[in-house]
Image 1 (cartoon, rainbow, N blue to C red):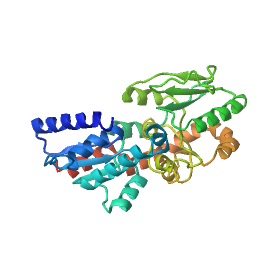
Image 2: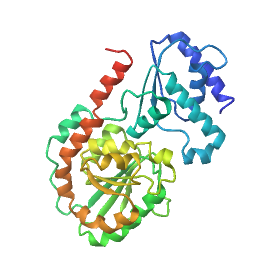
Image 3: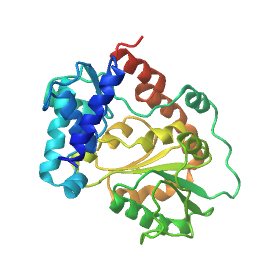
Image 4: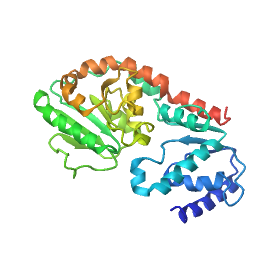
Length: 321
């Protein structure tokens, strides 16, 4: 990938740039794309195209997961080349506030904004309405969307829910939407878990609006700080758009918990033990949380995840009016 595919990808990219002659290139240096992007835009082997670039940093490549998969030498090169592209750019942004702060500390260059998924005008319009009335006798339904990254924390959440189910008079369902299936995992409980596969973002937001909670775990031990402290889960924004109160679990230094403790969006737990001791009573107050969180969801969305504002700033940073 590094010596073969990256060279061919760089040749292909140079050819595409020569043919299209763009005014600007939006570069997202992520995983293996970092190598050909570095070769093309950082003047490796031959002069790079004279075209300004806008760089968006989504994740740092030197996380523990990638270190185990790719080795120290490769991930170190990826991190170095990604930072070089950030320095080279005429404008730049990243997908979390801690990541922006870290990049400015390392490079001296501020980002234009935190650029992530966002809430559209129709999402804000939906959130101005009162939450739908509870259905008598309906179970408490908790959503999880996307890939399970921290499976130990997820397994512990399942264990806690298993012990709580007898105390929940209406029952409980954990609903999973993902391109992966987890039915073969030792923690999967077919009696009260449902898998719905992968659906479009618009469909996902629609179906989530009928649920009660969204769950987001990040590492509670901070053993992988490059992921835990700097990456930010998109599912958080998806839950906000659906008007769901959020159950957040993670280390206090994680990007998720640094943001959620500034807003009253649901339940924040900084350890598995804390979650085990206080989750039951709060789950039963689903109507209270769905009503009280709406104002805070809108406030958080307007502060950081307004899609219209993000697009305007993005195009402005690229010189588009």
